[in-house]
Structure formats: structure tokens, C-alpha cells
Length: 372
Image 1 (cartoon, one colour):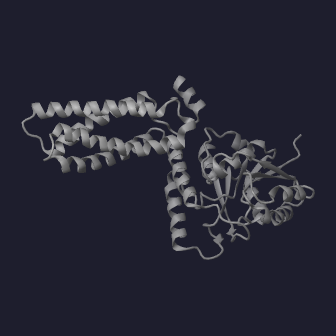
Image 2 (cartoon, rainbow, N blue to C red; image 1 turned 90 degrees about the vertical axis):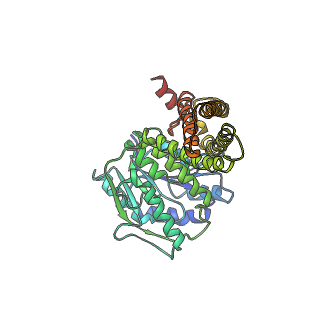
């Protein structure tokens, strides 16, 4: 039988200086309990390996090194969870900002079957953050929480990286697609947890090393949210994104169309203006391929994009030509809106045909869905 009750999954990157104290505090907090510490290291360049080899002589520590890290911290956590042996899974950072002394309190609601997911929260009564946070960082945290509200509910600190769940709950997750460092939010959604409990923690200041929260990671968080919206709202989310992109294209195209209305024939002006909207869409398509490439069913997403764009341009040219020769007078805004509307209608139909409506699913799952 499995003798490990608790698996601690700790992603690391150049955190060697923090590991001895971290292991010591974990050992004191979980004294008398069976546990394992799985350090998932993303190929650190410090002395993480020799430090872990020494610590493993005293503590139940297992170092798992990812030579080619993928999907950031979230990918590291899932790598550790998939190998974990414990009945309970705990995720925490290695930088000593998450207090190991809170581990028994974090596990208690799971052990008493009072919750499916337990979060160490900075923002409930009794919780705090040590040190002075800048106004920008405070606003950044509040906005990030607000954006997650549609699927995090009333959870006060859904972005917390200190949380626990049962192994059986993790095994029930579907379509895990981690991106960046907010893996807790990913698991809350994909495990379909119903009972979430928050316990207060004092979020400490980092003692050694550097924070991994960069501007790049914040953009990855927005991309991650996009996937979660797709998962939680599979019909509404793609439609909303489509409307946002097409509305932006309409306004930019209209500005160009109005500027050239008196200079060129309406047919030429509308076609030229629509080319501007194609360029706008292309910027979103670049992001789409970069973040969703492994989930895309079609082998040549750029080829399908170009083919769709060409057909759109032809549709705009044809309807513009028809309006110019058949209608006595059309206001510039009406002319552009009608021409643009026909182009977008063609885009919508062909995007469905070319499967450019990815909803954050893995390629094998998406293919299965289509075949079904």
C-alpha cells in the first residue's frame, strides 16, 4: 500500500538558497506524518542539484528536473502532480513566501471532507502581505482577481499559488492546458470543484533569489484567462472574441474608408479599407497561433487564414461593385457597413469550416470532439 499521505509539489527555478530552510520548516510542520517533497526544477543554473542531493539524505525529497521546460510554472506543477504518490496534493512556492507552518491548517478541510479545494489566502480575515506593495502591484492584483471572477466566484485570492486538493479530485480534471504561473486557477476550473475554502496566511517577503513575476508572465496570464473563458463558456467566449476583433476592424476600416471616400471610387476604397481590417485580424492570428498551436487541428493555420482573407476581399469587392452600380445614393457609413458585413459573414462561415474556433482544448481532445 502507498505509505505517502501528502505530496508537496514545489516548482523551482534558481531557488537553491531557500531550499534548506524550506525543508526544515516543512519537516517541523508535518512532524509525525508521511509525506514527500517533489521539487520540480526547470533546469536551474545555480547549485540546486547538489543542494537537493544533500537535503535528500535528511528529508523525503525527490528532485525532478525538466531539461526542456514547457508551459512555465503551471507545467512544472502538473509534471509533479502526475508523479505524486500522496492522497493529498499541496502546491507551494520555494521562495518562503508561503508559510509551511500553515500546512496542517491547509490540509484539515480536505481531511474532514469539508472542502474539495483549499487555498492559502492573503485576502481573507487574518491574512496579510508583508512589506509595502506599490500602488501598481495592488491594482494589478485587484484587476487580475476581477478578471477571474466569472469562474472563480467569490474566492478572495484565486491566484494564490499555495493550495491543496485530493489526488482523486486532480484525477477528475479534464483538458488541462496550463500556461504561466496561475495553475491553481486552472485546477479550480478544470477539476470542477464545488467546495472551496480559504485559510488566512501571512504572505512573506522573499528572502533570496528574484521574483519570477515579469511583464511577460502577466501577458501569459491574460492568455491563460482566454483559455479558461473558452473552457467555462465554450459558446459565448468564442463569439465574444469574434465580436471584439470584428468591431475593432470595423472602426479602423471605417476611418480609412472615410479618409479616401472623396479620392477614390467607393469600390476601390472599400476593398482597400477592408485590407486594413485583414491586417488587424492578422495581429490577433499571430497570437492565436503562438499560444494555441499545439491545440490546432489543421496542419496549416496560416494557409487557411490567407485563403479566408482572399475570399473575404473578393466578397467585399463584389458587394461594393453591386452597390456602386445599382444604388443611387448610399451614405459612406452605410456603404462601408454593408460591404464589411458581407466580408465578415464570409469570414465567420469559413472560420467554422477551417476550424479556426479553437476553445483551449488539446489537439487529441479537439479531434475526438470533432469526430464525435
